[in-house]
Image (tube, rainbow, N blue to C red; front, top):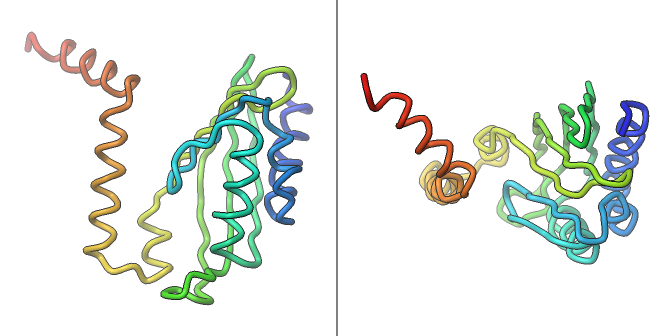
Length: 167
């Protein structure tokens, strides 16, 4: 995919997310595409991705806005920085404004997203919501355990340890 096509794709994805167009959001993905959300986990297939957008993102927020910046593409991999903003509708955090700065990685196939990953500092979101530190610590510990259990991370750690084993 070229840069112009990738830019159009992420712009379409962000517009669909911002307008609560769950079906349009899911259409940005291949039929068996995977969205790895840092909060809610992985969603596979367009139906599941649309469900995530409708029943998680927009069920917990209003005035949701998502924009991508500085897109780059190399072969079947795309990257973009993002900013998103919403007002929480969760009862404990009703009306609190949250702004998230993130970085996204896309595996591309046939002009669509085959797999999506994001990296954000969730602590910044927790602070803006007013999540109690003890609750945040439990969430972050769970996420850290999930990260360290991923096969790619396990392989990376083993290789890194091997590089330093001799000295």
